[in-house]
Amino acid sequence: AHLEDTMQAARAASFRARRLVRARLVVDADGFGLGQVQFLPMFRTVISLGTSYFPEVTASVTVIRAPFAAAAMYNLVKPALTPQMERKIAIFGGDFEDDLRRHAGGLSASALD
Image (cartoon, rainbow, N blue to C red; front, side, top):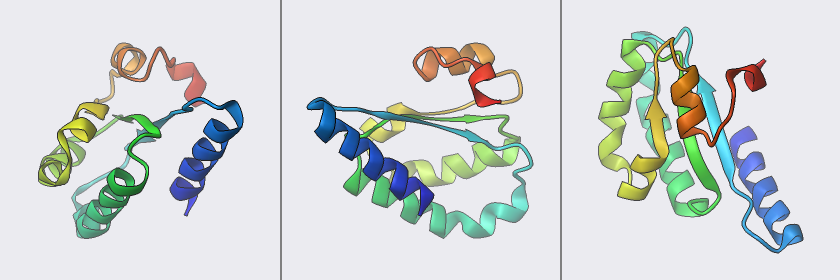
């Protein structure tokens, strides 16, 4: 529900500003492990909803502190993505600050605290 609220808020902000306001989602995957693979069907559904109902709002999705399991899971989900959504998603390990700045429009890791 929180993700949908965020996307709806971005749409409302776009309407008020009379220009497209886009969201950059940063996901901290610290602690993600193979035990979460059971949630793969739900993750695919969330991605499908995002690509179907909010494609214009999502500027980027950046996963940081991603362990190997997160990258492996992304490779399983990747075929469900449109090419446009695939370009918007990046997965980075523990040394992510430079990559985050590049992929998330200049966002600094200090903004995550």
